[in-house]
Amino acid sequence: MRAPALYSAAGSLLLATLTAAPAQGAPAVPGAAELHGTAVAAARARVQGLDFGACPKAEDLPGTVRCGTVSVPLDYARPDGKQIRLTVSRVRATHRDPGNSKRRVPRQGALVFNPGGPGASGMFFPLIGALPEWKRLAAAYDLVGYAPRGVGRSAPLSCKDPKTFFTAPSQAPTHPSESYKKKRIARAKAYARGCAERAGDALRHYTSLNNARDLDVLRAALGEQRLTFMGASYGTYLGALYATLFPSHVRRMVFDSAVNPDPEQIWYRNNLDQSAAFEGRWADFREWVARHDDVYGLGATAEEVQRSYDRAAARLARKPAGGKVGPGQLQGAFLSAGYYDDYWPHRAHALSAYLKGDPEPLIQQAGPHPEAAAEAENANAVYTAVECNDAPWPTEWEVWDRDNTRLARVAPFETWDNVWMNLPCAYWLAPRQQVVDVRAGFGELPRVLILAAERDAATPYQGALELQRRLAGAVLVTERDAGTHGIAGGPNPCVNGHVEAYLLEGRLPVRRESCAPHPEPRPAG
Image 1 (cartoon, rainbow, N blue to C red):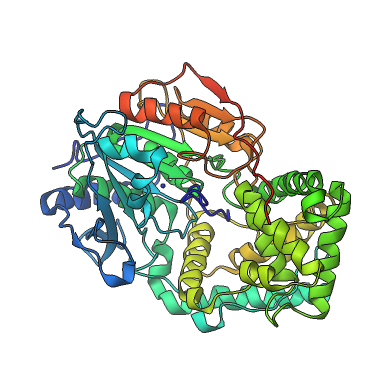
Image 2: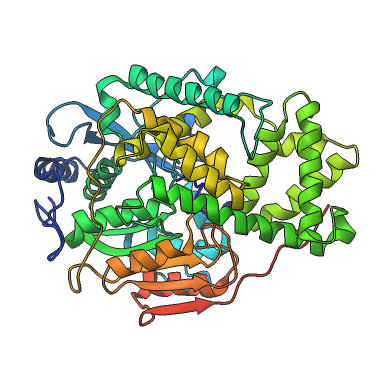
């Protein structure tokens, strides 16, 4: 479920009990041995604690952020076996009320954040407390980020040589030929083999269930009896698994841009839904560009803007910009505009400039950055391993071809690009997990807060409705007529007010609330 998380352009974010029973009325969670192993590892982490000090230079964090590591079992069925170390970052609660400098704000504990992916690192999250929208939360909470297993320096996972990760320029056919499909199938098979060869037997242990168990060990290492957590995008699925496995360990949880947790959706069908939703968001972007034709000159209708985009793609196919930006790089750059509308002015300017003879803005925005290859390869490896391990996937190419050929007729923008991203899962060489039925009945879990933008493409709105249905007492706050992916701490004061009321005071609306959309971005050169 490809989804960069956290609101990006603003800057964009001893155990209580030794065992935790599944929520009453829900099917037993698979892995009794792993549940016991989590309790053992968490008890050990609580005794050892977390020793924070200066962050290693590799983390590229300022001195205001302190770093540490926590040990977790590679395999929770063998808690005394091989251990891996997860990197953790923290900024202590400031205790300073941004509205009243004389008032000292009491500390409420640690707020742990997962930015999604899977494969994204949260190590930079504590820096967000410097932004105005986060200062009230930063006054009351230690802001804690971490790199999940496989990410960054946390037992890093790799599936291929990073030097060969970026292939640019590349094509991005919306209706690929049979010969092109065969090339991508071969590439997917090679990538799956690379993951198995490089990771060996450890590959099977990079799963969402283990990520949830790691989170409980981190909670214990931080000295928290109960967890206060915010997850964005994939981080909501991680949080939902945590709530199902460890309901008695939950204090407060914010699910920002929720993944649909229905076991039937994880992960193949969720990706189909994502591809369909991106078509609508791509239309939103084109309509916005058309309204500002006087600035960009790309067309006065969404259809005319599409023709401008197609003209650029055809030109790049013949002659890549700067020798490295082809149709594939163009599509990748504009896909990010589907996640965050504050990218819209920059992308529209780059496209306009390119068609008028200036390729530099497009090269800057869409071109590959070799210095980021290792980080990108690592993130892609973790993404692939977690999603492929988590659930069954179709193993016959005919199923993928049938479903996505149909979908591409009505949603051509992202469909095939999404296929190539996930196709290694068809040829995966590690065992698949049994998907957990995320669920909690009334009284089994503290009330949680779900945030969703109505037109979010990366995590379509139906996922938020499904998550609310499965977690009794959950409250859903919707940003109407908006599609930014990750809305907590962004430009909508209504959304931020609900987040603050919940995390600072425990206050929630009765069941559902809506917020007017944040203002559209202004056009700019």
